[in-house]
Image 1 (cartoon, chains in turn blue, orange):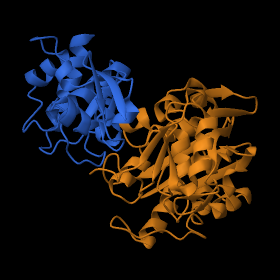
Image 2 (cartoon, one colour; image 1 turned 90 degrees about the vertical axis):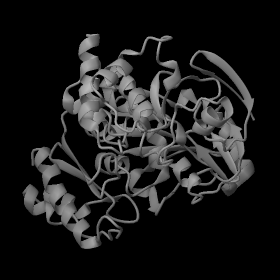
Image 3 (cartoon, one colour; image 1 turned 60 degrees about the vertical axis):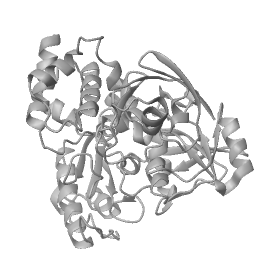
Image 4 (cartoon, helix red, strand yellow; image 1 turned 45 degrees about the horizontal axis):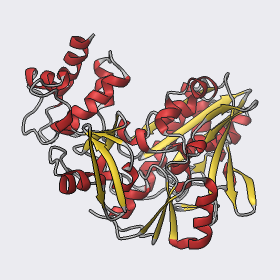
Length: 153
Length: 274
């Protein structure tokens, strides 16, 4: 079945099997491998991208469901060489260890601040409950999100 | 994990969806947000030959004030329910419970109708439907019918929805002055409830629904009867596990679940001011 999507501002059209998961489409067909596959069971959030501006786990969506939608992946977040404020905040606060959860964590955090620009620490922790860090590096991740919210206000 | 192959039909209207169901019968499954069905399909626990995608039926995504009740379109996303001022003011228990479904990413895709039609005893929203005594509107080839929530859940992941029927609307009584409590016990963030309780009290009568205490979502009828007879919250909560048949899994056995049901029911009733 033919699927047309916009990813990071670029249009893509491919013929895919209906059972193709969106994350496999993004990684294997389009070739954008910044979005990671972690648990593959919609638990860990490593595959989080934005669909029409909202965080979604791309392992739990079919590519055909994304037809005609506007997608944003980690590759599309920075403005050229200038990091997105959330990426910059993760860098400054050392909010990553092994880095595997980072693309999904950053995408979830950007969506969180879009919906709640001035969250409390508790709201950040609850808002990121769909993302697991296998290094358990949550302390600095929460710090980075709060730092980004503060810097943006 | 990749689902087994299936034919994909994107419905442009409820009528198209019903026509596809009529043609393919029990070979077909409806796909709304997909956050209950796709995980099962990836594990190959569900292998429908035909997937009918109703996710674009925007005319079934709405929250309307319909006089004595709220009319909520089956394809309304959890995110839209939890942030709706109308739901927050008229059905606060539903808004609160919805904010505990899965995680933000799940709530951006999952729908109220999909969650209820899935009929999972471990999911949060059916307990709210039971506590609030919701009515479900179902459309089929012969037109529409209304189903009281007590007649909807018939078995494990089974509902009274026919193979050729579509859940279109959820009707929740407006209860602006109700007091309520929602309790969800789990050990890790975003897990399913090991046990959960929805309790609501309005005009002196109480509704209590239980999560994960039987093979279907189940009403705590003994608690409701005790409260109607004037029992205190803690006395009524002692009846929470009566008539239930809780499952056993890695998290908990039946006895522990029965204990949780009693404790969480008491807490939910106390939060509801009983």
